[in-house]
Image (tube, rainbow, N blue to C red; front, side):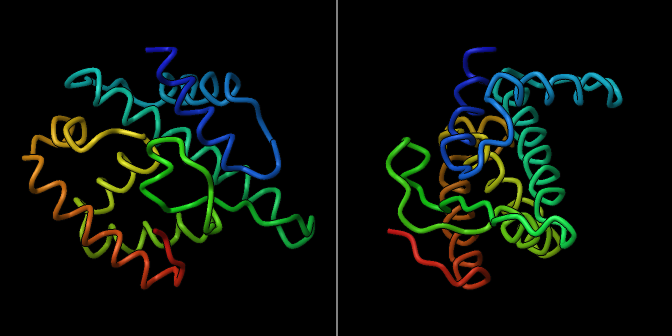
Length: 162
């Protein structure tokens, strides 16, 4: 599992313009954070990876917020909201990580399942089938929700992806 978590962290790092942390450090910080939180029972391997990916996302958002604080005046961190990234293809259009995080919070208020699917697919790098297993839904339902969530985020963020 460590290798898979490292792969997810490395994907995050490729998207981040300023290298605030190394992939290995991100995995370790996420693990420490998960260990400090209340004990969790994971349904399966995919569920563990999904939770770890979410922890890594939150760590990166916290780092970005600190870096971009008005008193520090840093540059924006940009990531692509693109299915191609799930297959490690090149970055084309970007979106600010903090803006995406805020949009996901708004999406979660409207539809928690769709927000969770975005977290698992985009941030966790899980496939449709792995996401379906982690959420105990059918792959067809995941595909429908994923398409709706991407359309909603597209409108919300006003960026295009291929």
